[in-house]
Length: 153
Image (cartoon, rainbow, N blue to C red; front, side):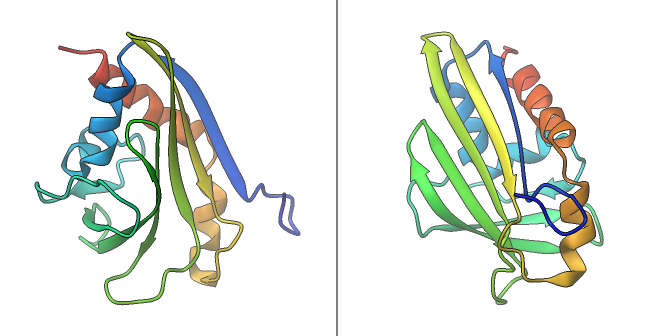
């Protein structure tokens, strides 16, 4: 699906990572690890102790831009396989964009990881330019950095 200017509402990238799905999922589901592999240099920090375990949970993240805080509302979850959240400003309505991670174990030491950004329901006009700039290449940058961490020691 595209907008009226030809931009894709959903960007996605996939790659094989030479690590177990469990190891990779832990790096994603524990927000305190995310700034270490974020390929867009957008995430500054997340407090430890926010490891996601269920739909309906919320974790907070501080962004690099203006030290803004985001509440991330978990809307999809399957331990070791799937996690997705919708960010919002603290105490405000979610503007309608979604970040999703899907993991498909290929064997005990290899996992196909798909990272998706979906802004098809984005209602905040101020975020559209940034949403359009979130391309598959930018998602791949996060996948590449996640792979480097997961495949490390």
